[in-house]
Length: 123
Image 1: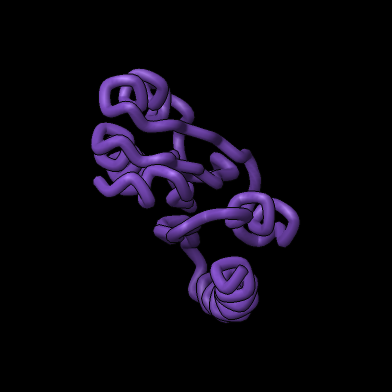
Image 2 (image 1 turned 135 degrees about the vertical axis):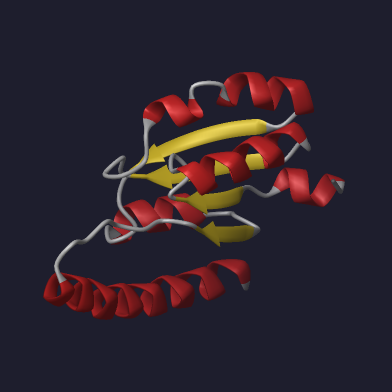
């Protein structure tokens, strides 16, 4: 991992989920600075219980921000100064109407977050 990639945090949304936590582990063991944004609605805290050890093993740094990708302030905090975002956040829905509404809201939210990220990375 290059020194530059260690300097700017890599944000992993949904980092407490199965896939997200495995990404976090791999990145930390490679020496990355990793910032997780998760609201623990589907992810589990125990998936990140060893994050400190992974960071120590690889020389990386770990930060956890508890919040939702739908919360603009939490997203702004998470992406501030970041170098990349790995978006793994998701929700479990069992109703087709709710799933459709959530999908539309997710697309709108993602567009706004991407604009924020583009502005942040341009600094």
